[in-house]
Structures are given as C-alpha cells and as structure tokens.
Amino acid sequence: MSSDQDKEFNNIPSSSSDGDQIPAQIQPLRLPTPEEVQGQDVWNNCAVRSVFSGVMGGGLGLFMGLFLGSLDTPLVQEELTTRQQIVNQAKNMGRRSLSSCKAFAVMGFVFSAAECVVEKARAKHDITNTVAAGCVTGGAMSARGNFSHMQIA
Image 1 (cartoon, rainbow, N blue to C red):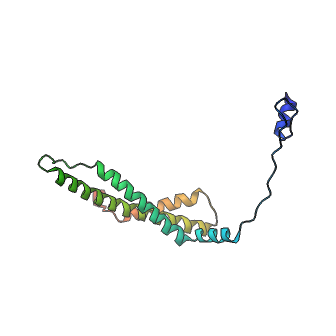
Image 2 (tube, one colour; image 1 turned 180 degrees about the vertical axis):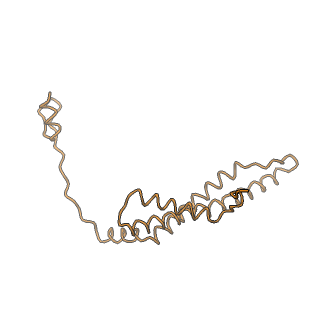
Image 3 (tube, rainbow, N blue to C red; image 1 turned 90 degrees about the vertical axis):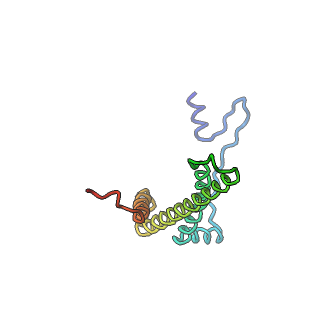
C-alpha cells in the first residue's frame, strides 16, 4: 500500500485497473504582457486606488442607506394618506442613502489612501499597514464628530 501512495505522490502513473493516468505537467512561467504591466502600474498608484475605493464605498453606502432607510418608519402615520406616507418614506430613504453614501465614500477614500501611503513608506505589504490605516480612518472620522458628550463634569 505504501508503494501506491508513493506513486500517487510523485505523479507516476500506476498500472491499476482504473486505466493509465497521465502525470500532471508543470506549466512554464509566463511573463506579463506590456498591457498587464501598465495595468498593474495604474493600480499601484495611490490616487487611483483611493478614488476607486471612495467611489465603491459611496455605491455601497447608497445601497445600504436605501435598505436601512426603508426600515425606518415614522411613529405617527395614522393621519397620513397612503400617498403622503409613500412620499414621506421616499424622502427619508433618499436622505438616509445620501448620508450613508457620503460617509462610506469618505471612509473608503481615507482608508485606502492611508493604507497605500503607509505601504509605500514602509515598503512592506502586511497587516501592520491595514491596522495603521484603520487607526487613521477612525481618527479622521471621529474628528468630525461632536465631543461634548465626552466631557467630564
């Protein structure tokens, strides 16, 4: 039995009743084409990465806002007509989706820019870049907030 395992491990065809097996061939490495190299150079640009992340974050925020905005229901709806309720709900969804769109776009842009800059500065691609970018993004997002609720009396 160990000889069968050795043959399978080394990709040597065995002479069993299953038929002849063809050993897996190793494919030679292929050099990238000039178009592929140019595409990689474009994506390695921090500005392109950041703008793309901001746009994609904005798109995600738009859909999240539409979904979460549809779940918000006003407390007083008994005296509103159906048309007024639909218009009110559409306005709430629009406001919520625009707000989420802006927040996610800024988050995506800042995170991607920070990660790219840290990666270029350190000349390494590891988890430390992501952690540093998360700290920068969290600090940037909280800098816009109101800290009055955090005051010690």
